[in-house]
Image (cartoon, rainbow, N blue to C red; front, side, top):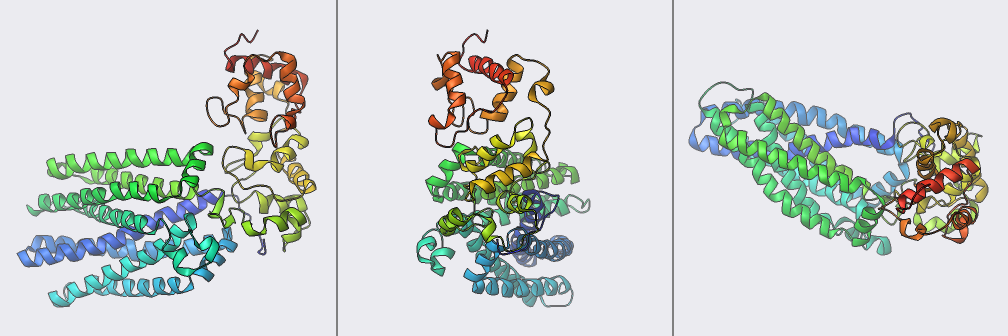
Length: 503
């Protein structure tokens, strides 16, 4: 909280994903494409296959434009965004891995230089020297991945670094090797996907079929590496992380399911149109394969980011930039004492620093729909116990007064229309909405913290007692602050959950 706050309309997660997913998609192709070009060129020169050499020349032009220009721009964009979204976490990564960054930047400079020479050297260099440049490009690009992989994996599984602070423990963390193999498989897969996109536009020559089958072989080889490496990667994540994610968040499981389906679609398209019917491989099919591969890779990256919640560096720093080791200080002093740059509006300052890293009032992951029709006291009670809600959020470490200031800030922006007026009925429909607003943040019927069995058989008086004395029934549970009409409708809805007659 020692940095000025960058307040924008776009949600942080969407902004980061829109740049980072595109960048990693291109950068991994840049690595796999480098290997593909040099291996395919070596084979083509050995066979004196002029058609394939001409195709590789055209591919290298596409390769240079996409990977060097667009890839470099999005890479700079990532640095710009992370430095503004979470400068504290960026500072930690730079200070702990400064020499890794130096190695990565050196490799990147060599990679860029070699790629430019490789493209312009097709007709200006000997075959031997041209291949040497190609190998220099690939090795430097893969070493760049090696370096970045250690830092990215560290954010999810810092391992013993949390206790020792040692460089090697942080870099060669529990998921380093499986992630490296997994990402290498993605590089191989993307090389074939991009190459098929270029080949699909080529209607000339009998060598087209052989090239498409070659490219498809690269895709399937990449999949063959990805599947076991993915299982290895998941097994290397500490069970406490995966278990917490499974219990409190839907996003990781949803992302994994999308990844499975898109990888399956890619495999089917590749086998059918790449191996069995290569003459039917056209731009539409190749573009679909490209979209499937982007969906797969993007889902993996989304899973990796979401499973880390509530931390930006697991076990060390929360997503709102509060270091775990300073928890006691924050609980004693409050947030405001640690916010260096204050605007004069403490409610806004508190919301930005405690909540804004993941939520907006009415935009990305909005809070307004969650609190419409409630009151500041209820919102404050939720703020104080936010770590108990579904979603795996960091604990609130401020003072009770600061919780009230955040609640006032949120309440000022939400719809104050009573729930009864919104629904227009006093039956189970109203009760369901009351449950969503007042109870559903912590209790999901049939899911997270399901209390259906506990509520079964209770009469109206017993339910009223729970509503009025919530703190006595669970740590952090607020008392019910809705109206009498909302309370009656809530009881009707609870009867439907427990299988009883709501009448």
